[in-house]
Image (cartoon, rainbow, N blue to C red; front, side, top):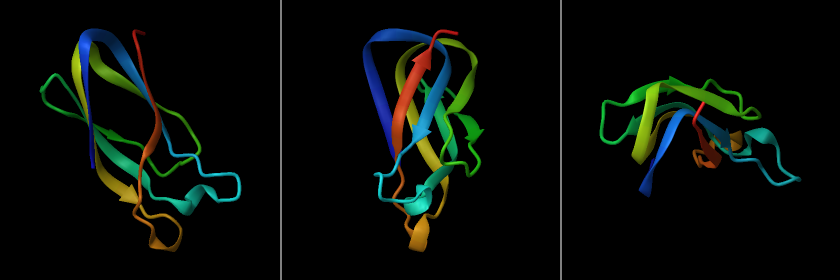
Length: 100
């Protein structure tokens, strides 16, 4: 799966933070699959590959290779750890861009 965001006004950022989907209160953390490797592509440049590991309960901080004025951001999930009972449903709950 790929998430593509296109901004009408460029956003300057050098760090990206994201969180996995948080299950509802009556579910376990591993109910859904977790993205373990993603690619981050900015403005159609060469993608940056990022290993997220299998931790579903932490916020992932991704330092971009260099500060960028972002008009288009593409996140592609390349690998995932299956969820409970083999679930392959995967998603992100939060995505934030930071100037520093």
